[in-house]
Image (tube, rainbow, N blue to C red; front, side):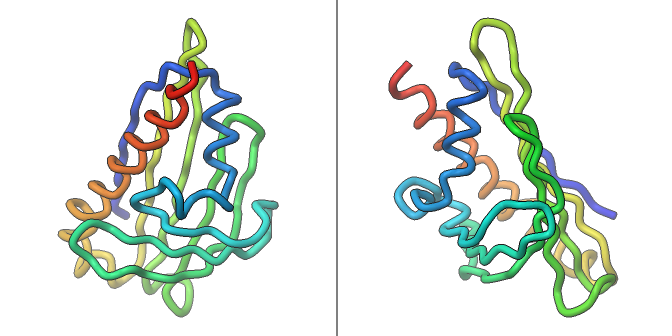
Length: 145
């Protein structure tokens, strides 16, 4: 299993960051990494997601929502073909900090027989995509504070 982890501290309340994260309709307007999400974020629901890592082609996939805990965590799992080939569990976590600040954590757990073949690109391009999204969500959340 391989892991990616990024975080950013945002000078905005957790409610505001959460609202931006779950406002899928506006992702195409601001999100440089996750270009679109369609569907409901209920546990067990299937989403339609398009991601575009820097220096890569856009990728479409249909993950299943694993967890939606209000103002705390949103997670899904996406798979290539069948479980065990290439599975990615994407996790967004929000941690309330002192003084109306939020720590936004974005991470992913990869497992499957093809992960070693894609790891080099994942740890550079995908991590950069996470960081770009983190910076944009920070910019949006802090804009009206």
